[in-house]
Structure formats: structure tokens, C-alpha cells
Image 1 (cartoon, rainbow, N blue to C red):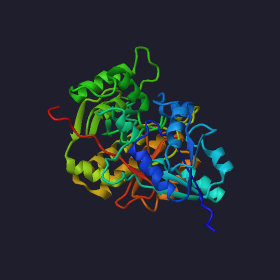
Image 2 (image 1 turned 90 degrees about the vertical axis):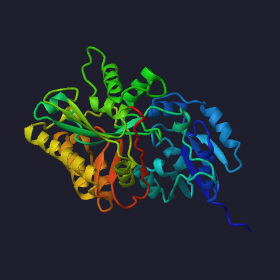
Image 3 (image 1 turned 135 degrees about the vertical axis):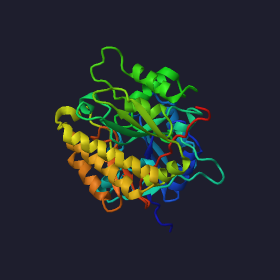
Image 4 (image 1 turned 180 degrees about the vertical axis):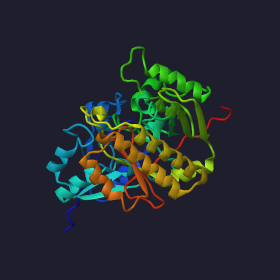
Length: 386
């Protein structure tokens, strides 16, 4: 008698089904009968801030047509954990995610249910190119930005205490980052409104100024910091200096050396947390003063020096000191749940911080060793002649 096959569960959007999806599903099906929990149209709109290319009915139809798939259902819930009720009902033996689909919440749920949790690497089938839905949406899609150190200094209510610099990197959209997760998705949506699906071939600083103005309509009460516009439009790794109380930096320094960029790409990874709650208000408790702002500024300078010299200890210290300076000024950035997750990585990483304003989003880690179940970024290089 054949041994009973295990039940394997995966969950995702599977919008614009491509060879990368198929390779992942085929590999997952090797562990047993494959059940797919499909993100609803409503969930994707909320998480990604866009309509689906194909409706949930069309996506389910295409997935059911794959020979490796046993059953497809639309998840009952919403948000990143939209599959939780379905998982509890199905009681699968194994829950499988890919690297950028991993989150500590998913792992904790599997531990609670006694379900084996597996993370698969993104490996294309045979000699096929690597694919992602985001990459397929455009040949040169609008970038995201990642903040590395010194951010918050772009807000005049911070820089009025002391001038200083912020450091960001413009990153290729190798995955579609979640809304309300500290990756400047709201400013990026403005860039898409302005320029459709790719940046114009203009000087990056000019694009940054244009996007900043467009992102902040006349009469805007809560001005979006200029680090978002700069981080999206200016390639490479950028350090930009804010004089006291200014919205726009007075000068820029850029790292476009591919050796330094690769050095950082090899040492930086990310872990998905969850979108900031709708009622999250990081400004409800602040401790902004000259001493704390000076600490933030000093940390950013140290991180920049570490980047220029590829000194992992110096860079890590500046990176971590910057984060601690941020949460000293804005303690609401960190919650008990976030602190619990950070503790899981303290022994594995040299430094860590939260993306954007915190409250959720992504945990950004610096390590010379591979961090299990994390994913990498790709920094956007300078366009020829610009």
C-alpha cells in the first residue's frame, strides 16, 4: 500500500503567472499534494496598492490547469496573513514559502499548529531566466528606495536642532514591496502617476526635485520627506546634507562604484514583517532635541565612512547607532512584537534597523554570513551619461 501523501500548502497572489511561479510550484509539489491559497483581488489591492492584472477567478483557473497543483482556493482573510483561517482548516503537513515570502509571523503560526515550515530559494528552471511579476510589468520599472542611515533629518522639525545628512539607496523592484511598509510606496505611486512605468532620461537630481514637488501639493500639512523622492530617482547610494530647518538638501555625495555597491548588496538582507497598522502614529511620542539629533547625524557620518572604505565594523556601528538614535527620538517606531523579532537575529547579524518610520514593514539586516529566510536587494546603477 502506498504511503499517504503529505498535504503541502502555499499561498500567494500569482498575478501574471510566469516561469518563476511554475518552478516554485513544481518544487513545492515534490513534497506532497499541493494546495494553493490564492490572495483575493481585494487583498492584493490593499497590500500592493494596485489592481490585479488578472481577476482571482482567472488566476485560480490558470493555477488549476497546472498538473503539479492539487487544489486552489481563494483565501478567506485579508492582509499578509490572509490564509490563516484556511491553514487552520486544511491542517497541512507542510507550509512552503519562497525567500521574499518568509515572515516571522508565518513561522510562528506553523510552530503553533505543528506544521512543518519550509523556505525555498528562487531558482529558475533549467536555463530559464529568473522572473518576478514586478519585473514583467515593465522593462524599466520605477525603483523603490531603502533608507540606510540618518533618515528623519529630512524633516525640518528634526534638522532645526542640528544640520546633517541622510543616506539612501535606489533599488531595483525585484519584488513588489507592501504598502505602508517603509519603502516609500506612496511617493513611488506619485512617480508612476507622473511618469507612467519608468523614469525619464533626465538628470537624477532634476527628477528628484520634480517628484518632491508633485508629491507635496500646495497646502500639504504633512510634507513627505524629500529623502523618498531622492532615494527613488537618484541611482546608487546617496548621502545628502540638510541645513538647519530645510526641506531640500544643500549638497549631495554619490557612491556609484560597482565594487562598493556589490559589497553592500552582499551584506544587506531583509525580512518581511507586516504593514504598519492603519492607526499607527509615530509622532504621538517624540523626544527630538539637539543631543539626539546630533547622535543621528554622527551615526550617519560613521556609516558613510564605513561604506567608502568597505569597513564592515565601522559601517555596522553607524547603521545600528543610526537606528538607535531614531528610536530614541521616535520610540513608537518599535513595538514589543518587533523587539521580539529583532532578538531572533541579534546573534546572527552585525546590525539591524526598520524600514522607514517603523511600526512594521521590513527588518533590514547587515551580516557577512547568510541570514536564513531573508532576501537580497539590487541597488540601481547609474544610467550611462546621466
